[in-house]
Length: 109
Image (tube, rainbow, N blue to C red; front, top):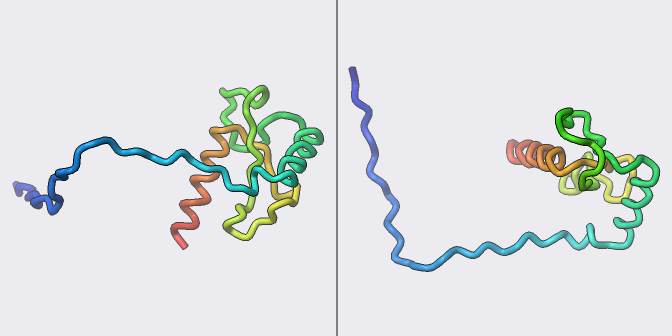
């Protein structure tokens, strides 16, 4: 039976004291624009106020939850900003999952 060897740490203990502060997340100015807000109102009026994600967890409600207008093809990936066909209404868990998947795909490239 072989023993596993451990490597010595190359990190030195910090001599700094205090707490770490994290900047609050700032919204992209595009999502605060009158054009985006108008598009979202029109989409919600046409489609209703419900999560449209096909992978939505059936154990969680689709209606009566906060919705996000999520670009199907993200703007960072050359998606159209104001095309209603490129926007899907998603609840927070579905929006987070889809965004994480898109970031992972982008990181692979």
